Image 1 (tube, rainbow, N blue to C red):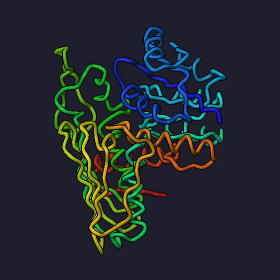
Image 2 (image 1 turned 90 degrees about the vertical axis):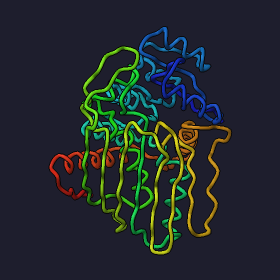
Image 3 (image 1 turned 180 degrees about the horizontal axis):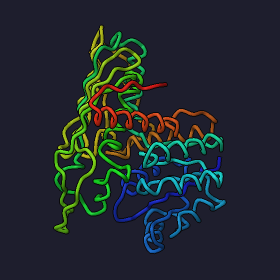
Image 4 (image 1 turned 90 degrees about the horizontal axis):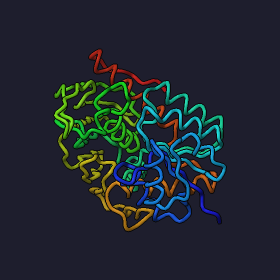
Length: 356
């Protein structure tokens, strides 16, 4: 069986999400072969190709996605650049794995989801935390009645980001218009896990706050204004009848608290990573004896690569088998709509009902 031929947009041998997660994750999946990389200029692309073992390097990502010897494109660039690459890759007949957030706003997410649906190709969005073995296991336990009817979920989800300082390449995360914020990244990942375990939100209230309105850019002495929230307090009602309180904390990395109380017991998801729970090795703890948590698809990894490898393994199987098991662009649209509802709830000081 020929491996799927992968191209990564946004490869950099010195830093970045592709280097830190996708490259080690893919090393454990022989059914996917990295054949091409692109970067913002040819020199970085050439260095990345040499470092990561790709045979082709592109300083122009749109040329790379049209390469006839590429089957799958991974989009790991900054959020404002997602749309153009995703649409070009789908137009070229490539399957696409795009990092979350899918687009800068709901309109972009819908445009990409519509294009994916028309193409019939397989797409995945990088909600690796909600797709992790632990979250899927927790969801299965709840469905199977391990805690009885779910009553209340309490979550505190944190990240080191959106604190007092930021490295220069993360300065853009402080600008709400770029679509990569505490709300969309930490909030989106956390809400995706909550909905996976206790069902979709049907009502939500929120207080989004900017506690620190400027941030120092490390090593430059520069300060930039923060226009996105660095703290979120959410209360929700879910389709299961469960209620939830969710706190998203920027600038203060602490272990995940994900505590579900049901009529017949309790369930927790535990883990810690300074980048957020989605980067952590997660473990489910249930008050009742339950089936053991499955092992990850790829062993021998640590940190953020664990959950990314799980998503890649499932995505490869989906492409081979014609199944659709991973979070896709329609899921991204649903989550983006929820984040917009949270903004409305916070701005207007009211509970927002979410339509189907």
